[in-house]
Length: 232
Image 1 (spheres, rainbow, N blue to C red):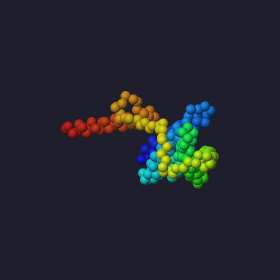
Image 2 (image 1 turned 90 degrees about the vertical axis):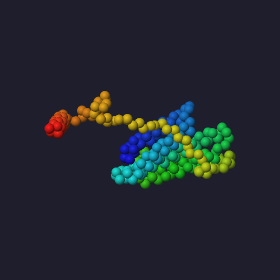
Image 3 (image 1 turned 180 degrees about the horizontal axis):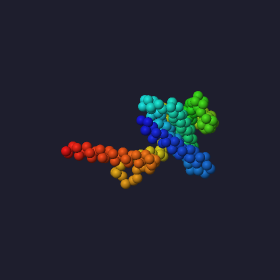
Image 4 (image 1 turned 60 degrees about the vertical axis):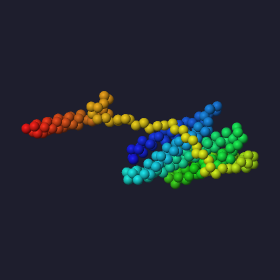
């Protein structure tokens, strides 16, 4: 539904904020923020954008006249965070491989997956003529992916000689959800049922409130008269 879409849209954006903060922390010297954590945050952002996209492409949203640019934007974001998830998971694979001596092949596969996603992102951005800030962010990520992929492929083909696994054989990147939509139990309780003041009770102009009061008196008088007639 339209309401469901409205409620869901802030979730991926909020999750993306946690991802962006983790990226900054990960880059900071001496930081304990691991690449695997960044990957999990990105994977969850991609999942939330995917959920919002499903609502955006639903017949109900189409019937409601949702601007067609919204599903495109949501898919763009989903693909971007999918690319980021694979990129940072590849980095986590490399870190683990250095410790146990194997896993370099998986790093190559995940970097290839990341490049596939980011290529789609940039194609969408160019086709939709998105802003330079958005395109620049995607290009920056692609530059990192391409650089790491070239190094990983060379090292694996000349040093580690590991089999590069198929994409389908890899486990999905684990997700870490940092956000939750909380709906109020009763945002607009019936008059007289709550001790809390009614929302927007004083927002109407004085003249309108006086007219409403007079109308309520007339309705009450009419109801009393009808009740009296019924008794007679």
